Amino acid sequence: MQHSPSDLNIRAADMWSFGILLWELNTREVPFSDLSPMEIGMKVALEGLRVPFPPGISRNMGRLMNICLNEDPGRRPNFDQVIPILEKMASS
Image (cartoon, rainbow, N blue to C red; front, side):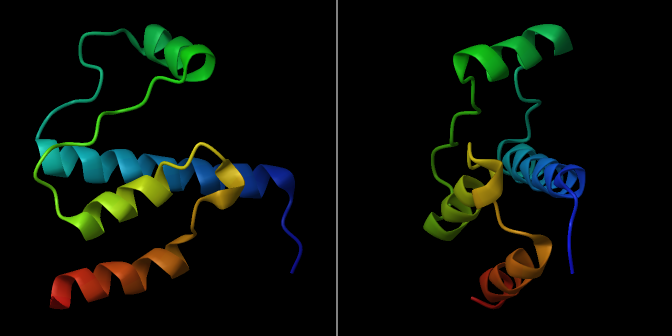
């Protein structure tokens, strides 16, 4: 099955968003709350701004967040790959 580049970009963006959601759930904070949406976009794109990994999260959660927030969109997992990771984390 062929995917258009825009499909792959959307999926990679969805995975990035999921990584941010995991960060929000672990920190109970809004990322970059001191910046406007325009500032966030510019700093992410031009300066490599990233959310800091919260202290005290489990190694597995840190790994999951790390792969979801990979700077290379092509290296981010898809949800079919993430679901078994989440299931394993839930059962341990």
